[in-house]
Image (tube, one colour):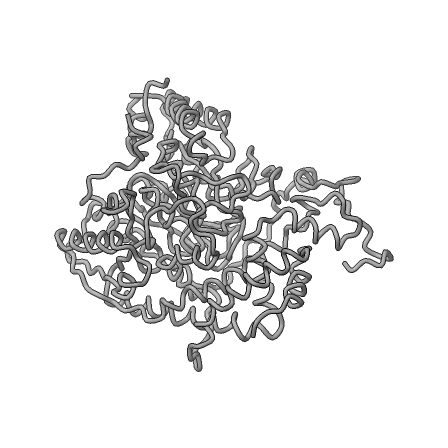
Length: 101
Length: 491
């Protein structure tokens, strides 16, 4: 099942990356080539095999003591943002603007 | 010109020289900074050099020496950190425009531990953007050059970490390894690079790529230096729930040899297509050396290892696409100033901030995790992961370590490999170890007969048997009389 350019545009929407026409065309070729190289995984018989989501077995949940710890100071948390106002992150309007976000 | 030259010294020689007051930590720091000034214009391993931090750390060591206070295991040892590690007082870019101006507000556990052990931070090291690559060519700030041949790549993604050691600019460095990103550049630059068992070193504060695959580890000129660094950085961290307690002294049995140990070759790997003859020969020579040391050389099959590449290029991008969702331009990262709406701001900031390989991996991962596709690729990949892990478990019932090439070939030229899927083959021998979580180390075994460039072999160990793997590596290392820094760093 090859990816179409429309599929690639849909993936870009899911990934929140703007694609111009050139790049969409190029990525369609590249992603299809990568997917072709992943074919071996589709050809192998995996009936009765359980998935492994984590390489180390036997991990158990350990809860830390419910103690107050010093959090990152607000000015530190905001230090790397390019839009800050009144001690908060400033973002464009997201309600009522007819925006897709 | 400084009084001493760190290029010729191991971490052990530096710590004992400082303890015995043959030289000061400040002289060591100055020597490392001089080496950077002399050689990094050609090598370009560093994205940022931190002389103030290095000299301040050196002064702390020197005053501890003067007052007779106890010294840490890395006291006075020049170190560099891959630029995906948070270090207070530095920028951290992940070699991406996305984080070009990011200033660290907290510290990675591995960095903090290395620094409290007394090491001297020389700077932050170049890498493939967000660690996506095997050549350091995807760095947004230019590639690093291999100190053995400046026209060639240092490997990647931790290319700067390998090159800085090979060029004698630092004594040890830290890197991260998701599919071979420590071992492959170590091989290409002729240094030792160790990926511990998953969970041995905390990942906290190291920008995540594939969370179930990533592991931090050291580079050094010798196995002993790598073991010394492991003593400083290993152990449980409340801030990484996958990290494990470590009560091991990684240096304790380095000289115990391999007599009677069983070390296995994997015929299918040595004979694999794309492996250069000089790499094959070097691997067999390593096996003969083990035999001379009294080890038993045997063979094991890893029948599902050939599926590792496909599984990795599903699991890795899937986890990466999730991890890189945090780069939304709001809390940190590049912001597209022309964006009018929130949606545009996400879409344009990410387009402008990420390079082509990063965009490819995010797109691939988003697709692989999307509804309907999950069952076609991601779930089968995780089942293959079970098969690969079981292969290793079965193999390690019979043997103590597995010996393979680290990379199919020596360092290639800049720009020589353009096709992304061809580049992915650089990691054909290293990837399955991350899939299964085992430890792996690349040990330099001299220069290739045809290329004249460094070649490494990989040793693979059982889960949490890291100290024994280092012992096997140290035994192999003892068979070779080789230069551990490139010619440019000698004399």
